[in-house]
Image (cartoon, rainbow over all chains, first blue to last red; front, top):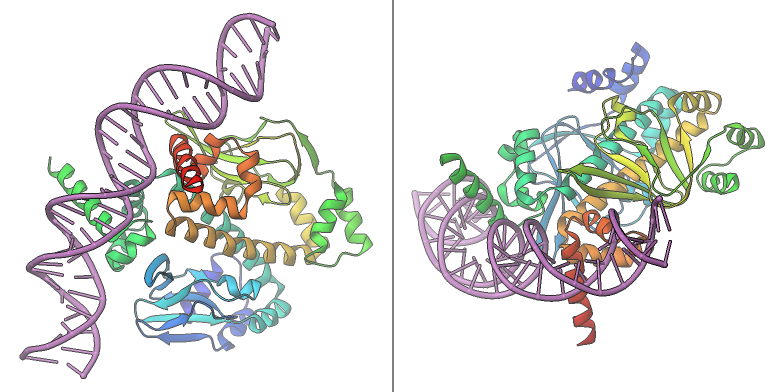
Length: 193
Length: 193
DNA sequence: CGGTTTTGTTAACTTAAGTGAACGTTATAC
DNA sequence: GTATAACGTTCACTTAAGTTAACAAAACCG
C-alpha cells in the first residue's frame, strides 16, 4: 500500500530515494473497520485522511436523520474543515467499507514540508486542482435536476452507484430515497419503451 | 487598492519591505467595465482573477440560457479550471459591476514563488481553506431546500441578494427566477401572518 | 427623450419531489 | 438460525418547483 501512495505522488512530482524513505518512515497507514467513525460532529480534530483502499463517507445528522454529502474512495483525501479553522466539526466521517487510510496531522505535515519543500508545492498544486474541480462539481449540481444528477453519476462514477447504499446515495444527490427509487423506475420504463 | 491587497495578505503571513515591493512592482491591477467578459466558454486561458473591488460572475450557457453559478466579490479570487488542466473552459466569467481586478498568470506566479517561497505557503494555506469551505458550501446546498438556500443566503451573504440581479441569483440557488419570486412571496405572507 | 431590451412578478397548468405508510427483502446481531 | 433492524421499493397524497405566457417596471441606447 505504500507503493500505491508513492506511485500516486510520483504522478505529480519526482521523488528521490531520500524522499521516498521519508514517506515510508512515517507510520501513517491504518486499518479501519466498516462502520468505524473517524470524526464526530462537534469534535475538534487535527487529522487529515487519505484513502488508500476503501471508502470514507461524510454525513450530517439533521433532526436525527443522516444526510450523506460526500464519499471519498481510493486516492482521494479529506481534510476536515475543523482542522483548518479549529472549530467543532459540522459533520461526521466514517468508513462504510473495511478501509486502509493514511492519517496525517499538522506536526507531521510541518516536519515534511520543512525537510522537503517540494511536498508543500505538491500540496498547493493538488489543493488548487481539487478546489477548481470542486467548484465545477458545485456548478453542475446547481444547474442539474435530480434526474440529471443521477445520470451524471452513472456516467462519471458508476462505481459509487454500485458500492454505496442507495439511501446514502440519495442524500448525496440532494433528494430522498423514495425519489431516487422513482427516478430509477422512470428511467427503466423509458428504456423499455 | 494595492494597500487593500497587502492588508489582505498580511492577515495570513508577515511581509517585509522587499516582499511588499515585489508585489507592488507587478503591474497586475486592471479596471474592468460592467458587462466585460473575462473568459469565454471554450477558451483556454492561463489567467487567474482576484477581486479588489466589484464582482465577477461565472456562468454557463445551456440551451441558449445563462446559468449563473458563482459570484466573486471583494477579496475573493477565482482560478478557472482551464488554467490548471489546460482544457477549454466550461464556463464564462464576466464582471457584473465596474470592477478592479488583479489578474495573474503562471509565469508571474512561478517567479514570485521562486523569489519568495513564503507566497507558495500562503497559496497552499489559502487554497486548502477555500477547498474545505467550498466542500461545506456544497454540503449545505445538498441538504437544503430551495427556500432554505435562499434563507441561508439572506443570513450569510445579504449583500449578494442586494447587488445581484434576481434572475442570476435564482440559478445560483439552483432554481428558476419564477420560483425565487414565489419563495419571496411565500415568505412575505408568512411574515405578515 | 422615446423606443427597445432586460428584468421581476404573477398566474394557470404540468411535472416531479417530499411525506407518511406499507411491505418484502436483505443484513445483522444475539 | 431466528429475531430484529436496516434497506429498497411502491403507493396515495401533498407540496413545491418547472413551464409557458402575459405584463409592468426598470435599465439601456440611439
